[in-house]
Length: 283
Length: 273
Image (cartoon, rainbow over all chains, first blue to last red; front, side, top):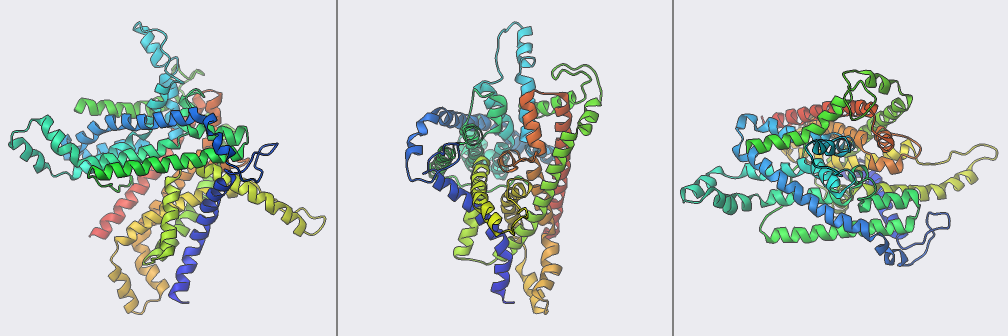
């Protein structure tokens, strides 16, 4: 058998699999988004922009996603950065690896189970009961945007810590000493040396978390109690409850486009800042 | 600084700890600890719905992991040195598979397959000899495995390709110069070197498939996987039984990941020496 033939034979199964299970379904969503809803649900072939014109009906879901996804990303960044800094710069080398693994471990366990743990903590008999005992009454935490935000930060913190840690760990510590020797205050050293050099890690972490948050369904479903919902929740509702495939496809297409546009604007912005994307893997 | 780090670790581990703690709760109430008992583990393990869901999840995860690691490795090896449109096509599809939210992949797969099955099923009926019952295609275990394999195969291609690119090509050329057949070179030179990456890919695929809720939710048809069971139980209210299941699932995932991690480490140190 020729080398070419052998390669083709090895590539064919994966190639066909990706075409049938990825390219075809996405093409179907694209085509269906221009169709109409059947009388009993499903899809009727048509070419209309009606579904896209109807998008404002789901504006709340887009609004929630576009507010809570960036907010969650920033909250995760604010909490993750000092920890990454501690692990990379301040922590003794003896403990570094173990402490880093401890951050990553939760990420590899089911996000479903980890999110639902917060039902206990934020639910009526958790934190609110504790607050009541010290005299703060009527605090509602579960099924609020705050609960969803906590779930988001909790779920995606490891994904943020890791890339920032990598970029801070690579940083030449002599630069920090040089800065101090030249009379900088610690704060100035941080602002003018450490922070700019960790931009690539921040950029990667934010992008990873943001992309995942844009398609989030589970955390708002579990901790938002139907009151705080993302586009992902709207999609589940459209496809599984109202079976409106054409409209659902239009919402899905819009989500993907919004995501790609935001991410590319963001990447442009970051590359202008002079940072480069850091390729990291969690394994 | 140290105090801050401690707080973040508490934030990360208290919720997991609470689930584990309440799984040993003797009382029925989910949020009041009434003493130690392992009764919920017994209840969970004797619940036929839980055991069915577990079986479905394990089977789907195992087939997915086998398919993804085999097909992904084949593709990663064949992609070596391939340039041009084929390379672009593969890279684009892998990139899309990772970038597109799981929920969109799940929905897209559902409506595409339901539509295709809607065309194929009448065709099967007309092709079948009269009187016999033709097989009908529907959503279920095969579609679940197909969807999980698509995504995890992309992961395996990335992992194995990274390993291959770190490998010394001279080794393979030397093997060919010494008259080894391509298969001989693969079996005796390439495979031993990339085996850790393949195994890690296998374990990752297994864990992904086992833990995945969102894609399975759409494409599993009438099958109930363990995450789907847990999700619908949470909807009905939190019980100590779910805590016991959750604790067991987390423990099992951790064991698998530690194994994957160790394998990758061993592979890395082997190639460095």
